[in-house]
Length: 320
Ligand SMILES: Cc1cc2nc3c(=O)[nH]c(=O)nc-3n(C[C@H](O)[C@H](O)[C@H](O)COP(=O)(O)OP(=O)(O)OC[C@H]3O[C@@H](n4cnc5c(N)ncnc54)[C@H](O)[C@@H]3O)c2cc1C
Image (cartoon, rainbow, N blue to C red; front, side):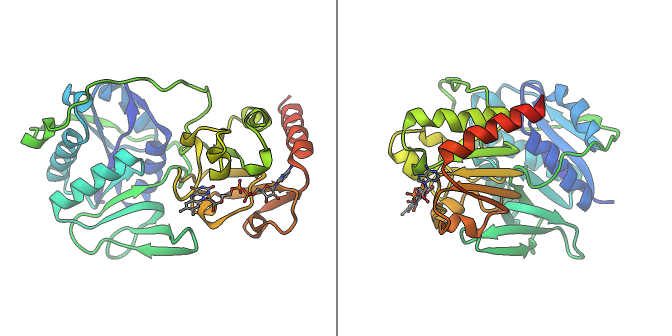
């Protein structure tokens, strides 16, 4: 069976969830071979093997942390040369998409970004994308070279599928361009203790209906009861009620959680563009005619100041 390379996104050896999801998808297309780079690469092996990696190619070097993406592209190119894979899968983060684009260019291959599903096809992997503000679903495959495909977080379930996880050291020689852009400083983001918005399995968002920065506390309380991330519409962000980093939509983040709860959000096309691929969508809005109700799985017509706190209490009670 052909091997499929999976680029491992990890923090000092702790594998991030979107990579484990990629392993689930990779198994549909071939035998997953993970590529783990940088500080702690060796510590990723147990988690990767547990989720289906037959092999883990590792390479630790300071270049991966001291410089931007090019060293990682050099390493993936070396892995492609070593393995001749049927495809290369990369998580759809901003960095992942840059790595994928650069790699595809070097390989002379086609690239597909932001896939939401992947299946085996007679002529190579077939990727599903949600396009034009999620108004259309398309299926496509790369017709030239080794397919390079980035996949959005939450596109597949994390599944345990124990495999050998044989560790092999990857031989990498860095290109002249590898040290072209140096990281000069790092400032850790203040942690809210909540999951990363683009990776969260549940997102609770508030819009103009929340009516003030202080009222976002009720959105946060619901989010915390569910272990969710907090999102916001542009109207709420532009009003200064919530940080821009939490904006969901065309000019904000694109999220695709298992559950998206929109409170006091009308459902403008630009907001939908960032959340329409969520698996289950719930909206709370006092206007029964609000466009958001056109795409929900469950809708509550009511005042969010009544509904959201009750929902929070109910979740807490059920969790015991
Ligand atoms: C180029 C461009 C890019 C954009 N990018 C984005 C983007 O990335 N993300 C984004 O979100 N928007 C974006 N927008 C803005 C978008 O068009 C909308 O203006 C915005 O999404 C509206 O936000 P909202 O739904 O919170 O506000 P509104 O449209 O004002 O809706 C508020 C809703 O809250 C309901 N409500 C009010 N009070 C309550 C209550 N007490 N209880 C329950 N419901 C209540 C109302 O019935 C209403 O439906 C963009 C616009 C443009 C032109």
